[in-house]
Image 1: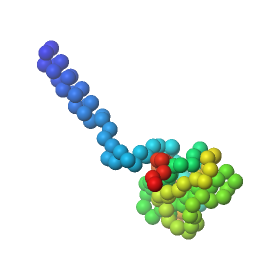
Image 2: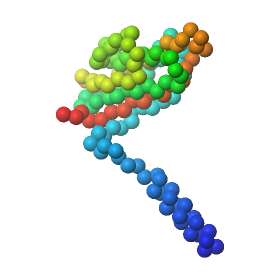
Image 3: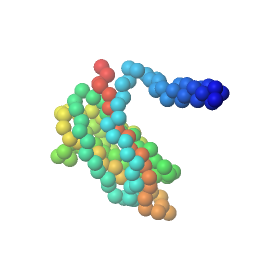
Image 4: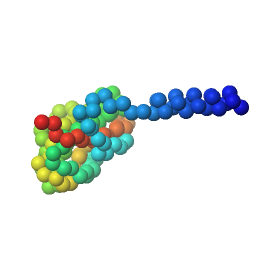
Length: 134
């Protein structure tokens, strides 16, 4: 019985040691706004809204599960005005931006696959923010 208790204590200590989160750069202070796995249709646009505040830097990251996929992203205010730089023919997997006013904003995502593509692709979308760094 004593051996089992010692084994359980060692396993618990190991688990606690692994579960601790270590900040690589504590000055960065990035926080999740939204993270979601999506299945996108070829040549279609997926949109979602999110709340944004002034005084923060935002970073939108799209992780693509397949090769030879061109992903497009755009961030707009609620009236559809693009935020930051937007190049419709540019391949993007990451986009940094800031907002001029607090409110609701829209992210639009799409992709174009190769001709032999089945018409869908899985992507992971992550939106994070941190206070502006001056």
